[in-house]
Length: 345
Image (cartoon, rainbow, N blue to C red; front, side):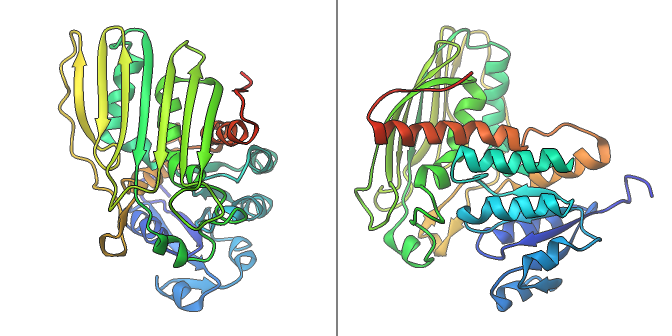
């Protein structure tokens, strides 16, 4: 069978809210097929009109599946992922890899031992605006980077947590920065490089939940640059902004909009603002009650398909996802211990 006609067969665990993005992404590719799904709720499992089961062990032991997409609550990621590795399957894991680094390393090591690939959903990296900024910084168009500012002023009403029992819990959610903010922490470190220290504060001020809804941090990078992080889910009445400003010796770039999907400032010496294609608009949930990141899952899946059929590299694997998790964990440790946390290099 030629690579042009070969299909990568996917199985999916967890048919909740985000699963529709995964299913739609699989269906858009002629080289992918959704073969089976799993959910504890039979009605949700039946919605995609493919083979289904309520026991994920039955799914992962099937011989006709290549990749298992895991879309369950955060606290279940690691054990399910390890079981996928033991079943000798590749895995696409929704964020985060785990609730902490120890869990994530167990997951990464399981796939290393199995020889199978662990992919991670890092869809914001595919925003055209983010790719333009990444290219400019990588080409040193801004000169030496002095500092940056990440601002996420989003809204999650209390109903968001009340409608799903796992949301807002330490055991299954893990943290707001871990759940919603980690995509943008990932972009910050992807653009500026390794972080060497973190000083942070977190609190719960606008919701009745077990986890934080606000986080403030100062990050120092190996390059010598600094960045501030302002993250909140208590913005009224809806998302206000998700922005990243990068200030260098020869240029300033600010990405903004509701999900880092517009270029608000591009002032770079000898480098005019590029013309970029429009990206996908942010996810809108519950009739506009709140918004999420841009739904670039289609590009995540295409990168996986290209990895297998064209032997191309992917920047959405488990080791890449570990980097942002390490920073988020340092934020939590710093806030708990009220001190600067040094990160290993």
